[in-house]
Length: 105
Image (cartoon, rainbow, N blue to C red):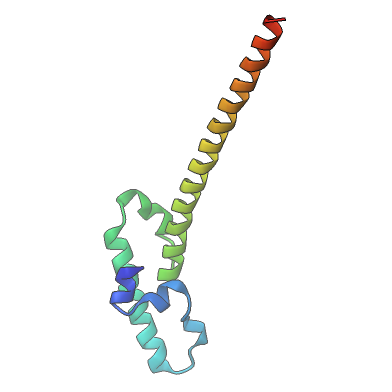
C-alpha cells in the first residue's frame, strides 16, 4: 500500500474512492487514469503465477483484493497447520503418558 500512497493512488486501491460515487465527467476521467496507474503497478510488480488470478479484474481494487485474499488464505492455512501440529504433539504426550501409567500398574 506504500507505493499506492506515494503515487496518490491509495483511495482507488482501498475503495475509499470509487467511480460510481463520482458525478462529473472530469472526475471520472481522473479516477480512471488513477485506476489504470494502480493496475499497472500491480501487474508489473506481482509474480507471473499470480497473474492468472487477476487477469479478469476490471479495477485495481479488485486486483489488490484478490491478491490480498490469496496471501491471507495462505497465512491462515499455515496457522491452522501449525495449530494442528501442536495439538497432535499434545495428544501424543497425553497418550504416551497414559500408556506409561497403565504399564507401571
